Length: 402
Image 1 (cartoon, helix red, strand yellow):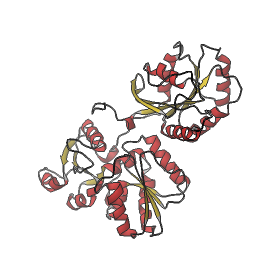
Image 2: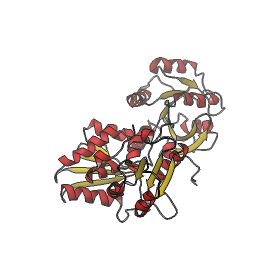
Image 3: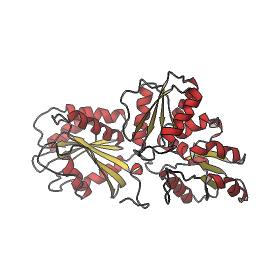
Image 4: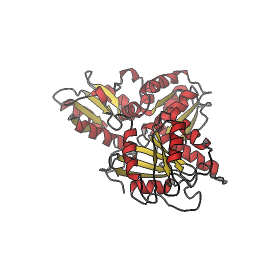
């Protein structure tokens, strides 16, 4: 059961384990984590869908281990398994390519394909030779190092030999500064007054705050800012009680225009969604994408991608409000496709614009993989908050973290 004291999955470093069927991926993860994370069986293809297991492991800290299906499993479901394994790879901040010590051939085509995939995405990668209890692994270790020029270890998940070296190796591969990036960056500092405008609509059930609000509130408290939380209807009264105008106002994007009308001239204005766009995505690309809305016609096609897989809600921001605003501006015949969760089209070439939600449920690596796909097809991309600011005519007055 998740609690407010746990690090959200999206903020944990994702460590994916990839390799051929029966290379011992599940046994390896169980040995490294010292838990029965994955089902282990001598039967090939036991792991079908990727298994995501949040952990707290020294010296890695909060992380998610991903156990994936074997890459060379010749079954009718292989194509579907490959698709889900690729999705896991796109989410991986660090990749482990596992090779069995008792591998019987010199064909490294599968390993080369994975290594190339991660190199192209600048994902730190290492090799681990498993089952070193079955066969002397040193020749294979030397071969792997020669072929790929990356750190390589020999271990036995069965006996535990070499497992203690895995965690320090992974710690060395963590990208510099990972998890230390500020969401608000230079928009505020210690002692600044910050107002959070948090309307409690149906997307924030009674008694709860949505994740971006919680994360940003915690960061502001850690920064020692002076934080005031208000609902939209109490904004004017709340501002009047402050001795001075706040340095920064952070609002829910849905009320951008209402807050803009009431904010003091001296105060910077941004939104939770905009801050997440800068934190996890490519803010410059998103701003350019929003400005492409003016070039859309009723013959254009827009993709709206939300992370959550909730049932449609009345006045839902992604399914109702943004489509309505777009059609009011462009025309009622504008085509809008909506996807949720990890359902994201492989071919984006048919779209004239992609609008991504704040992605509080996805890690940065995966959000940027979507951005890269859009750039590869020259499709403009933006996010909910930036899109709304543009449609409300206030984008040039929104503050972005530097």
